[in-house]
Each structure stands twice: as C-alpha cells, then as structure tokens.
Length: 183
Image (tube, rainbow, N blue to C red; front, side):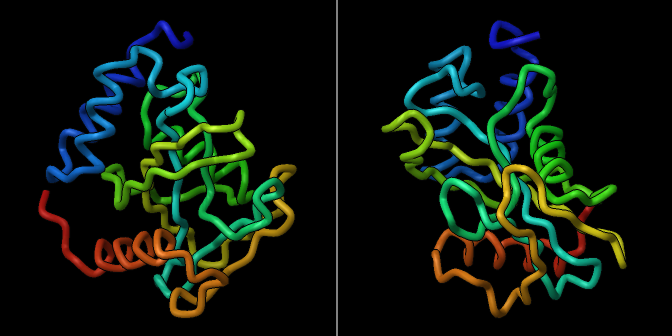
C-alpha cells in the first residue's frame, strides 16, 4: 500500500464529510478531492495529518508531548503512513507510539480541525490536522518516545501553552465527553 492506495483518502473524505460544514472542513475536503495523495507528506506543500488529544479517565488532565523539533507542548500526532487505513487509526498509532500508553479508548469522530504552517517540515509546508480524542485507562503508564523531549499530564485548566488552537481543541474534547452520544 502507499500513496496510490485510496483507502485512507476515502476514509478521510467520509470522516470529514460527516462533520458539520465549516470553512476548515470544506478546505480539507476540497484538498482531498484535488490531490490523490492528499493524506501523505508527498503532497506538498499541504497534506492531511492525524493527531489525538489524550485525556485522563476522569477528563481532568491532558497528556501532552514536548515536541523535539518545535520545542512546544502538543497533542500526539503526525503524518499518515502507507499502512494506515483510517485517519482515526493513524492518530491512534501516533498517540500510542509517542505516549508509550498500552491502549487508548478512541472516539472515531474528530473533535477539531486545525491548519498550521510547519517550518521544520520541508519549509513552507502546512498540516491540515484532523484531531481525535482518546481516553487513557485509569493508572495507565506513559513514557517518553524518541520524538519527544518529555511526556506529561497537565490539568485541562492549566495547560503549558496559551496557543488558541490547543485551547479550542481541549474545549471541544471536554464538550464531547460531557455530551451523551446518540447511537
């Protein structure tokens, strides 16, 4: 499998089209319609990425990584890989790899979309990040990965950053866990 395989792209389109219309959602959908390899870093300068905010079992803390290249605290995530078949799966893979957690309960519907420039990703690249929510089991042990300088739990009301996108994502996650889901 690889960029010529359309399974991940089709999953991304399906997932994004299930979200309420918004300028960000519409931009991501159009990007994927225009670019057969839109979910891979080979699509330059813009490409879809997948990330996951991990909350504690009681939803009071967020597990964040101190990114080695950016030197900032972020949720877990990154580029889609050829073996990924779903965006939620790509986000889960990244979160498990980067957090050292043994398992995460994943919400398959994204909680947030964020387009941002990434100067250390080939200069001029933009990530069209699709952000998912994961819940860690009570007492789950985490670890620092090769890609991180640190991994740490932070109170959701005392994050180590004032970056608006992070605050919006955490607010969306807290709204999601407080709202009963209809099956």
